[in-house]
Length: 30
Image 1 (cartoon, rainbow, N blue to C red):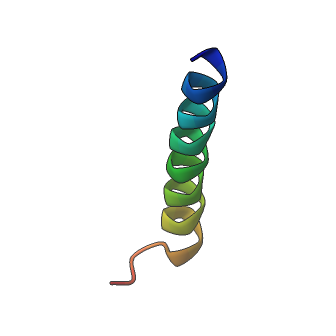
Image 2 (tube, helix red, strand yellow):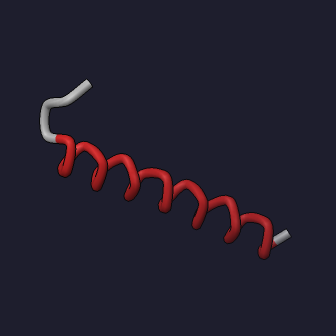
């Protein structure tokens, strides 16, 4: 169960990081 929780947490963190990086690079583009 621990491995599954770690995998899900890592996935969520990656998604959040991708959103932050994308918003930073795109600045104000739709």
